[in-house]
Length: 171
Length: 257
Image (tube, rainbow over all chains, first blue to last red; front, top):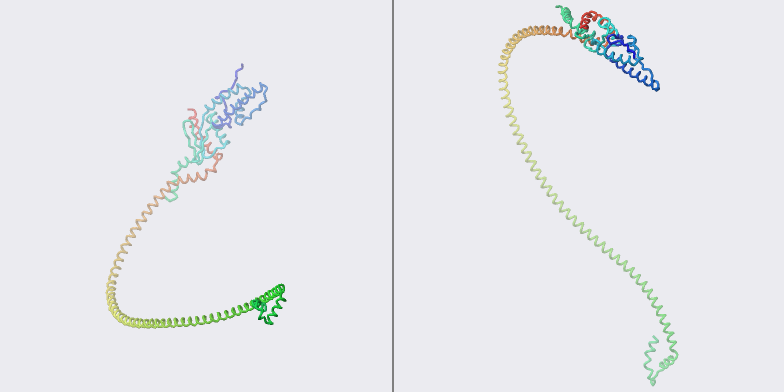
């Protein structure tokens, strides 16, 4: 019996398309479903049953497999991969980012690329929405918050605004 | 009649000694008129008698019909005459009675009308006399009233003259009071205006201070309304990355903890 060689979850590289914690959860669920389908197809093939069509993979799972040079041909490899992905889902660092407007996937990919380049290569984003921020972002790391919103900037400049209004009155 | 005579002479057949020529004739004829001949004569007489009876019946009937017609005509004439007489008599009596009744009624009505006219005339005379008396009384009263009114008007005029004189004095006094009040009021108004101006200035200062305090919130709300739907994440991304870059060290330190 040959030993299956699979990367551990600490060695995985996440593609930009897998940007949020929700993407990682979808990745695990999809991989479990693909594993089940392929295992069932292998059993049917051994028993001479009808041929089962190969599952269609999502872009995120395809990117993940390509990025990490993985294959899904062997059942043991798939099982191990599912296990490691579950560990990854629980271990990835999460940065909570709250925006004033709904976040589009392209912008999220750019942001996660910067985060993985600058902060942590395995980090993912948990996205929130708060229109009261007006613009900008409200970032929460594990132990700190960073209010980078326009609302905070306006409140910081309120004294200056009052001074300007006083100046307009001639005082 | 001849037969009867024959019968009458049948009782003298036994007296032959005193037989006359006539008796002899009869006796000769007695032989001639036998039983058959007698029966024939009886039958002939009977038929003749019946004929006579029938003729008499016809004549009697005709006489009776004529008598009935005459009696009917006579009776009708008599009845009509009597009825006409009775009707004429009744009409005459009725007319006489009605004329009498009407005359009596006319007399009664005339008397009553005359009595009523007399009573009305008396009442009119009384009313005219009463009216004349009242008119005279009213004229007297009016004259008295006019005299009283003249006296009263004269008194009122005198009284009004007195009042007007006193009223002029009071008006002069009131005018002086009003002038004094107006002067005092003008001073109070001047003081009130100064106080009001001061309060207005204070309120204005307070409102402006409140406005300045709220202006920042107004600007925030305005920006929120103006940028909320138009400033998408792609447009904000360079600014966000720039700010994150500025906070990169702090974030990295926190991630390593």
